[in-house]
Length: 222
Image (cartoon, rainbow, N blue to C red):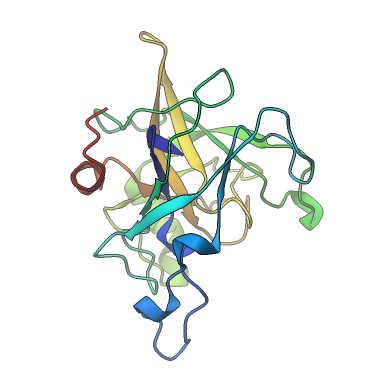
């Protein structure tokens, strides 16, 4: 998800190889090289080419210096493109948040991740779900001994049914300011317990919490 014409905000865990289970530390040896992948923007169909898509190469990748792959703390990364895309009706930058979203604020999460019956969709999907307060989210994960830290934000419905899932990692959670018509990046898909379970919420990397680091690296102010 772009925060500026030459930058993509995503999840750090998307940018390294599987780690040694005995020592899950993302050493340089395990990091993906910019030449290992490319960015496709303006895409709608998962397996079919779109007339609207643009293929871009990567110049640099940056993992948050405090990223912890064991706990998913600071699970955020930046991808610098070799050149920016052509902006149009299908490819647009998004703003970094100016303030934290309120509890219950509605957000939209999109991706090509798994749906029910473990099937991947043919086209880009989206869901609209509410932000969940931090305490409620932490209490839902306490029995699993998983910690929801301050750099994470949760969203979902108590009864379940709507959630990000495998294949959505690093994808955007966005919200619309109805007064200005401006879209803001709230978070990126990070982790959860299965998908869409009752009383369990999706956990996202909280962009507002890491905004200062993003701005230092990208020099983008919005």
